Length: 118
Length: 115
Image (cartoon, rainbow over all chains, first blue to last red; front, side):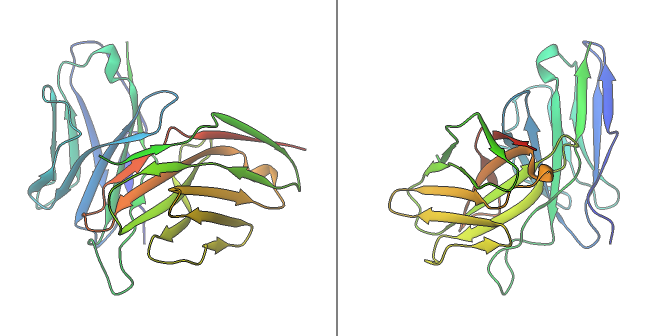
């Protein structure tokens, strides 16, 4: 069973361009989380999605950032008109649900996309 | 809002020795989960160990164990018989027991292992 796949691994953009980060969850997983890791910091929650629905986007900047998880295909984190401060590692995690008989279902992380803004 | 604090930006240990990484958290919830994640230079996020708040017994996974002090809101990680492969950034993380799974991470502790 393949793990969470994120691509690209590295993405370089110039200021003002758009960045699209992709996340394919593990097979059978319908819950996706995006986190951002700024240099020398821990991961910060951005958004939680289920298929075709944004459940919680409380960690997402109000402007320029959007996320989707369509019925078919990967989840996409989109950053418009990127600025230097967007440079970070962006991690996706997935889970099959929230709870199971043992209590909770842990999140499985991808290897992240490192976004560099020139 | 929940917060997680790791007060040790860096720690070092000699190979085969024991090291303890500290973590404190703040929450008003009684039901929650705590985790330690390892992030090597490859940037993978690897789950090391987890603890359910309702369990009094401290979790153990091979050389890794935790000291969970619920009243003090403390959750430290002990690594015994340290190995060179243990060198990484370690993150403490919190999850509310009633929520959908959003994790709150600490700032991380860089662990160096000396041969």
